[in-house]
Length: 265
Image (cartoon, rainbow, N blue to C red; front, top):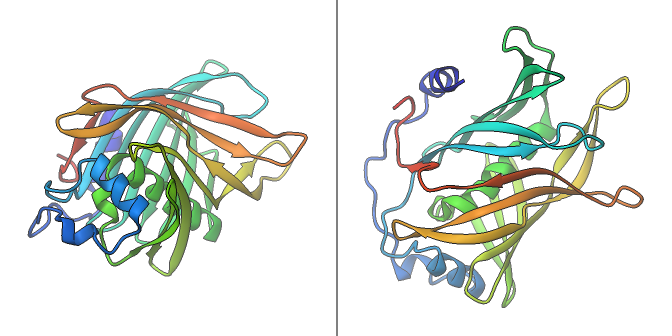
């Protein structure tokens, strides 16, 4: 799985490194809402050079169908801010068969591919809903893992109250938004958006449903001068009778994340 993932990242054509990495200053965050400033200070962004990429390798639990139990999964991900991009691979076993899923956002296009045994393709999903959904997932990752990604002209911030703010991202003609909820320290408690679409594969024909999606955080840990989540979930918020359904459960360990690495390194 690692070699397949690394080959795709290397062939993505993403920039290898920035020409300059200026440190974030108080002047950079001064125009932002007070809650957003508190969040960025808690995350240790001020005084550190701006991150431009990260690579993630971790293990998680996942529910491929909402009426099924949890399945262990392995995850590899590469995200870039030089060109907004996210390459995500996940592997798990379903009915004893290894299945790989790939989420992609690259040059404004989002997609989802499912491949049993990594030999043949069962389904590939593309379209404007996936463009939007993959972009807002990139935004979610940036808020939780690499907040200096958001200090660009493509991002706008809106005040809500002392404990939350809205953040909007634009890329390749797409616009996505989310509300970020903070604790008293400025740490993220939750991220909520309606710019994701639930893919329902229970019927004869897959269908998409625009549904509120959130990623509550279970806790925070400080590693190498930066704060990172200890873990969290991804939850679909359906109307009754389904209600709220968690489908991903991820925990982060020291060494799971590497920042500012070139594609294919």
